Amino acid sequence: MRNGGSDSNSDSGGLSHRLRKHRLLALGVTAVVLAGAVVIPLAVADSGDDESCWRLPTSARALADDPVAATKALDPGGDVARLGAARKLLAHERVCGDGARVLGRIVDGATRSTGPGKPHTVAQAGSAYAVAAALHDIELPAGLAPGVARMVAEHVVDAGRENFGDDAIRAVVAPDEVQLNIYGYMWLGRFLAPGEAHAAFEYADDLADADADIEFLVGELAKDPEAFAILYDAERSYLAHYLERLTDQGGDPAYRAVPHKGRSYSDATTWPDNDLEDLADRVGDLMKYRARYARDGTIPDLAAFDASVRSHTRGVFRPASEQLDTRPPMGDIARRPVTGPVRGDLMDGRHQLFTVVDSWAEERNLPAQRARAIRQLMDDAYVRALWLR
Image 1: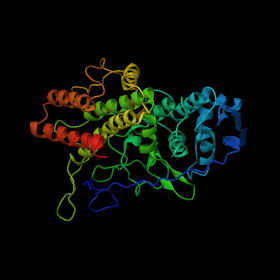
Image 2 (image 1 turned 180 degrees about the vertical axis):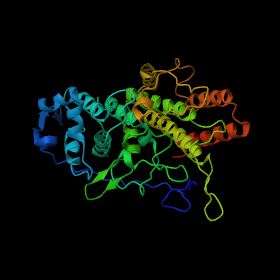
Image 3 (image 1 turned 90 degrees about the vertical axis):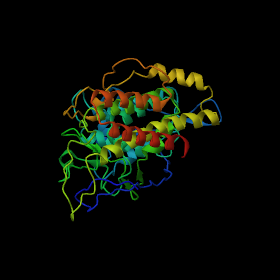
Image 4 (image 1 turned 45 degrees about the horizontal axis):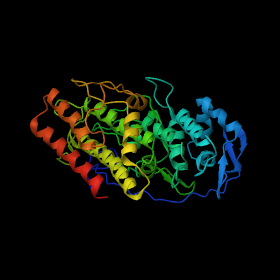
């Protein structure tokens, strides 16, 4: 268990990791009910082999070119009562023709912010939750993964958060609920953009059969080299974004020391340590999936897979040389401009992370002890994810 910063609901503020439950989805589907009482029939077509495939209706294809309508169609509502619409549209393991890639465009459009500097709305965050919940325990059809990976990257802060299930009381946290407590802490994360809604992927609702398991979803996405590159880019971009907002001591600038019963249960480095450890853990997870899929034959040609990942990777991301106090929305983090081409072995995730951390620490004149501590905790997390799970 990690020691965390205090929040308004706990004396100690210590937050333990929670294990998500895995449940199979019932997929007895005959119709897709989209927002606005529009009913789109589902079609099953012969794929030419022993199994059938699901054919995306023409009326649903129109959503790929209409992000507003796509968001409305996938938004499950505050009580996730409309989650069935997303499930019926997306939860298919075999999709005919180019239907899966079109579904990916629908997912991307429905969950993406409207442009640079624009925070996600409640409906867009809700749609992201609905996508993850709809695809729970689903083997993704070929072509869908890149679009879903863009959704995960677009909500990189929320998708990267560890399991704070007890804090998630609904699928979406509205902007007016995003408030730092007296300790400068918010369970959703650090450096949050004002006015942005957040998908609480940790939330589960047994009655609605809602369980948005991001870890499972990332494992599925990692089978696809383009999706792998999108996720890897998002994590490395988030690292640069995060580091450049820390203080020159490597701490959280929002931290407030408020002793409780004569002591403080955290300090300015507590949550940065947790966040950076979790980020290294996620990069280690990607490399773990790559190794596993190479061993079991899911990736039949590892060299070809790696070459494809590299071709889809945008480049490297370096932090600014001075502390920034801006708070861009999550979509801007994912679309952060690159600072140059990838150098060295892209699939050596530890090297790619440490190159950034070490140069940042040097440019910011970080105390040597603090720099070593950050490097060590990230190293430990990366190795644990890669080898011990």
